[in-house]
Image (cartoon, rainbow, N blue to C red; front, side, top):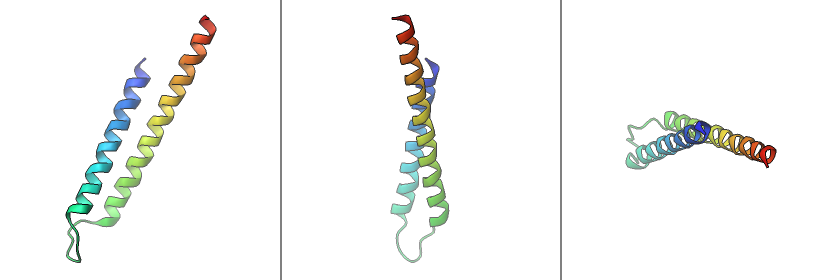
Length: 73
């Protein structure tokens, strides 16, 4: 089913974006930091929201598949 692969890819992309943002923040410590922490926090929240949305799609697709299999049984 396409929903499974699409949502898994979305979850993977969101995880990668979150990790990249966290790495940018960790790599630029100190008072003279060039990293905009507000921008990075927005990116992290966005990645978290995207991951949650894709997880919800995955759960829904799983429920729909289960319901379909129940009808066929």
